[in-house]
Amino acid sequence: MKKTILMAAVGAALLAGAPAVVSAQTSAVTNAILNQRSGLLDKARTDIDKAIVNEKTSGKAKTWYTRGEIYQGMMESPIYSKQLQPGEGVQKAYESFAKTIELDTKDGEFGKQAVTRLDNLYGHAFNDAVNSYNAKDYDKAIESYKLASKIKPQDTTAVLYSAYAYEAKQDYAGAKASYNQLLGMNYKSTTLYSRLFQMAKQQKDDAEAAKVLQQALAAYPNNKNFMLEDLNLSLASGKGSDALDKISKAIAADPSNSNLYAVRGSMYDQQKKNDLALADYKKAVELDPNNFDAQYNLGVYNYNKAAEAYTKASKMDLKSYQTTGKKLEADGKKYFQASVPYFEKALELQPQDRNSLSSLQKVYFRLGRTADSERLNARLEQLNKK
Image 1 (tube, helix red, strand yellow):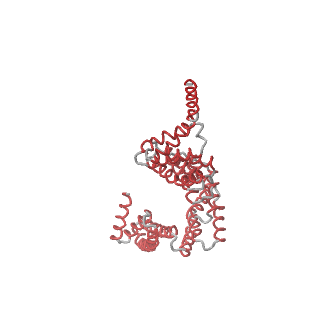
Image 2 (cartoon, helix red, strand yellow):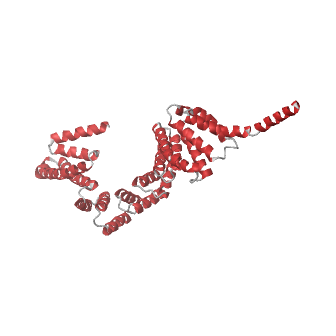
Image 3 (tube, helix red, strand yellow):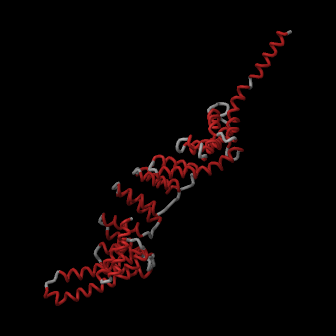
């Protein structure tokens, strides 16, 4: 009788022990949650890392969601964040919440919460990237920007900043890929096209530079910088007349566009057709008094005429000077005076422009406006110290 009882007891013990293995397998998740709630994130991490590789619990959305919560909590803790490698918290949390959604869908109990958690991770990934960039760890910055982009695939900011990081490490192929990714996302900006154009020029890829310019002009047909670059390419390839035709046709189509006149004036300047350039600059200012380039170039036109007159006078012999030299100097002074309002307006529009400051300072000096000349000279010195 005692033997029977003993055997029964052993049997009961064996039966009781059978589910203990499964319980131990699932208890890691439970322990992780309990330690997380108690603020013991290091212990919670140890428990959840065990559960995530256990075949009984690794396929459950709850396991992955809990892991994401724990790593995000550690990342945001001033104490436990020190136990993580740089960027590890965001990476592990992202992997966990993404896996949760994969297992549970966006409509599941844990999947819904994971979607919200992922949105909140974007800022952490982006800040990690910025900090790495500021520390000049460009590879790490790019990695974090790419992670931020994965979290919010529709966001363009992380992609744009990744391009900047690629450029900072002089990886122009990577930068170009990021800029082209932005174009594929329907993101457009003059800066984007300018950078693609400049990189093509740096690599001496004229065909690529021309292609980018045409894309830029299609997006921004009235952008004066792109038009000027297009003109320069045409001039460099011996197609100056074609370039002039392009601008003239653009003016015919949009006769009230001040920038177009300013661009054509610049082209006439390059061809030494001063009278035509002057007419276009004046028309540009008439249409838009705030056109900086036209105002500045009108100042330059008058400045150069003045300098030309004074130079001629200085090279005369005494007899010639007495006959016509003083008149030349008088004409030169008039041209200097005529340049003043244009340079002043240009400086008003762009107060930090060194060329405008320097030119106007010299004009003031030649006109005997010593106090004004010294005032601008002081501003120049301040700018040069920056």
